[in-house]
Length: 115
Length: 115
Image 1 (cartoon, rainbow over the protein chains, first blue to last red):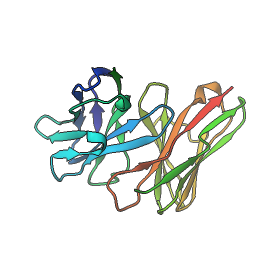
Image 2 (cartoon, chains in turn purple, brown):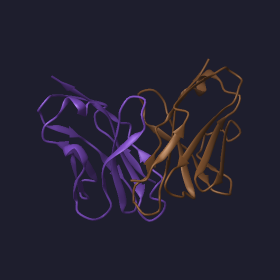
Image 3 (cartoon, each protein chain N blue to C red):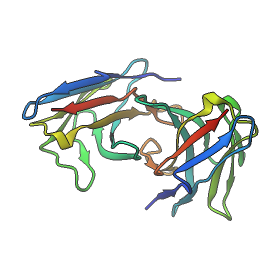
Image 4 (cartoon, each protein chain N blue to C red):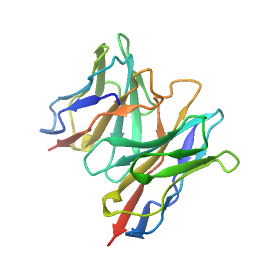
């Protein structure tokens, strides 16, 4: 069974500050890991993904995440927050050995960016 | 990337009526699509896996007679909420994989309000 834990349901940062959104996973098999962003009343947009290649993954809009197997973590970072980054962020895991399109999501982290 | 289109984006229906939501893969064929439900300020919960040409696979606790899923072609899956009640009001999102990329692609979501 797989699960995802996102620490912090709400993160607030100042514009220009570092963004750190935490994600820990549990999986009995090698996972695929994803970060999605959701704006109000919209679907999900993929920010980045880990699929067993490089452990440091770079995504869109300046975001990146590092897969750390020893810590079972996949934290999302961005060096400098922008007002447009304010949104809900979801970490998700799928099973690399089977249907990798079936996702288990974390509860989400709402990112607020203050001017 | 592959495009998944969901229609309608917003629907209001009266209690007791049925409403159909469509999920289309526009530029690829999808033998499997997924339906998620998202309550306000909460995460996405997988409702069911829609399989082309066969019955859907429902997650535990999801009423299959209330949430009818039909996947009649490789590009279209439909979710019909039957005898809708106010507690069915939610945001419904579909997703599909194109068989080439490792990530699923999401529709824009449907906001259902039952009055």
